[in-house]
Every structure is written in structure tokens, then in C-alpha cells.
Amino acid sequence: MVKFSSVWELLKNIATKEGYPPPVSVDEDMCSGCGICAGLCPYEAVNIRRENGNSAARINTTLCRGCGVCAAACPSGAISVNLFEDSQLFAQVETPQASRL
Image (tube, rainbow, N blue to C red; front, side, top):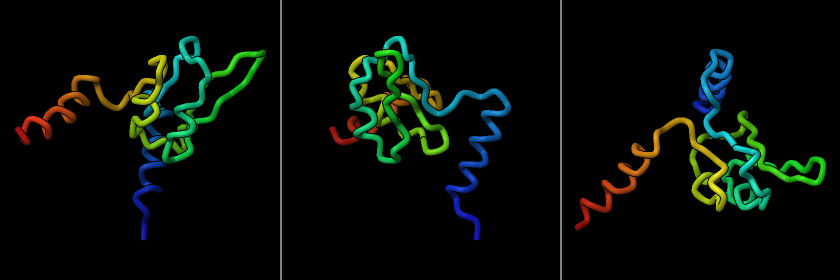
């Protein structure tokens, strides 16, 4: 039996080698290193790296599933979800709400 998570992991690794962006990326210049993202990540894919007196989030792409929890919680807007455009995400959020009205 093949686990879906194993196939997903293999596909992410192939995509990275082919030059596709990782599911999530961090602009370390914008990141304050607050750690909110690391505390909320359900996959423990975010770590805070401390170097030369500065702190910044670092994404472990092997663990990351691209769910976007870290990006949604980031107060500085330093984390980007690369799998979807913002307009696609907003459309998914707004559609269920509109159907309830």
C-alpha cells in the first residue's frame, strides 16, 4: 500500500528540483522572528532560526503541506503561500459565506 503523504513528498521534491517554488516561503528581511508561525504550524514545519542576533522563520519544505496557517498568522506578512494566488484563496473563503446569506 502506498501512502498519499509519501507520494506528496516525492512530488514536492521533484517539483523543487524542476525549479518550482516551495509551498511556502519566508521573506527573512520582513520577518521579525516572533515565532507565532512556529507555534501554530500543525505540521511542525516552521522553526525560528537565530543568527548574528537576528531571528527569522525558516520553513522545512519536507514537513510543510502548504496549508497557509503560518502565512495567515504572520503579523509582518513575511510568509507567502506559493501554491495559490491570493485571489484564489479569497474566493474560497468568500464562497461558503456568500451561500449562507
